Image 1 (tube, one colour):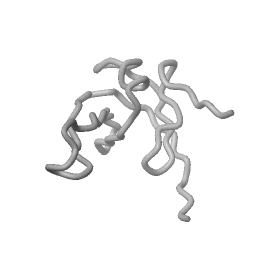
Image 2 (cartoon, rainbow, N blue to C red):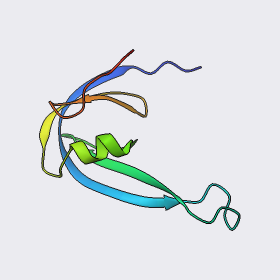
Image 3 (tube, rainbow, N blue to C red):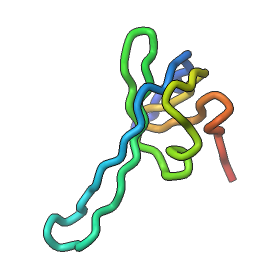
Image 4 (spheres, helix red, strand yellow):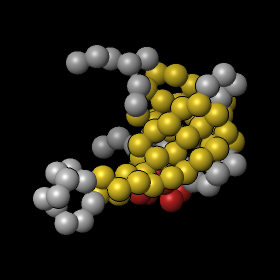
Length: 85
């Protein structure tokens, strides 16, 4: 299992979008909804797949510190917080 570096960067949330995903095309009548949010840093666009809860917690235009590890958001400003049990 590859361990990713934890990265912290100042960013702005620039896009929220949803898409439909059919796990087995033609076999499953209703799709799963995929939630994605995209952030613009000073030098790149970062897009993450998130839960409905995280998707609803943020709005386009928010700015703050994004902490992520590989494909996973750890936290974003005061809206998405690191949670561990």
